[in-house]
Amino acid sequence: MLVVQKLSHSFLNGTESTQVLAGIDFRVERGEIVALLGSSGSGKSTLLNLMAGLMKPTEGSILIAGRPIEKMSENELAVFRRTHIGFIFQSYELIPHLTVRENVELPLVFQGEKAKIRRERANALLTRVGLAGKTELFPSQLSGGQQQRVSIARSLITEPAVVFADEPTGNLDTKTEAEIIDLLIELNVNHGITFVIVTHEHEVARRTKRIIQLRDGRLVESDAESDEDALLHGEVGT
Image 1 (cartoon, one colour):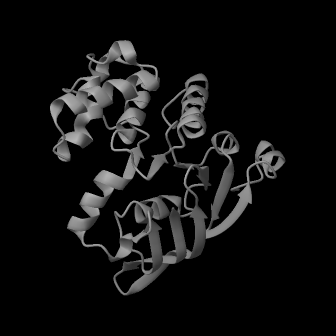
Image 2 (cartoon, rainbow, N blue to C red):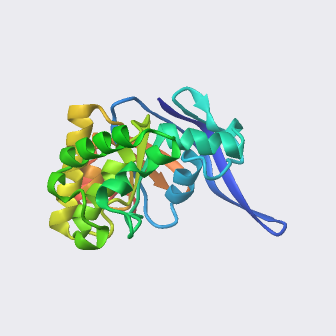
């Protein structure tokens, strides 16, 4: 479903090239929930931008739903992202003058969907994420955890092939962090939604089914269960 093959990327600074990713190979199957774990400088943000089609790789390919996104034009990528990729951001990225429901509906507005269908789908998703009674409030009237639930609902409105969650609990306290990860796991288990959670937090990574670890631009893939002790002792990603 998501296939990364022989992926490398370098940044050019004048005449000097700096490699940040080298020979990345992995796949995420439909219905998986996977953590992409790495410390600052590991290359995980660059990898996320490449997988989301926001940058072109120096070498290699990225297939989402069977399509090589590195070969798409900017216009093709924009359309593809709107229909096949969902995003959950650390800072929520909600529009303050739109209601909760209108924020969730927004991706369907860009697709030209009818207002009645937009409203029905948004309300259904908001119920699913536990915000049924808050659809007409504004983001400023919600807690941080509630705002992230709105962001999660918005990421699902187009029924994407994969949802990338970029440090989704980075702005939350420990209790709310656990609640948000519980919600992502519930959506994965009960609704088959594919998640790639990008994080530097060992506790978040340990909750997923599989860990894909980046270190110094290179990839080490392992199962979350087998790495549990290492994560508890802070040995992964150091």
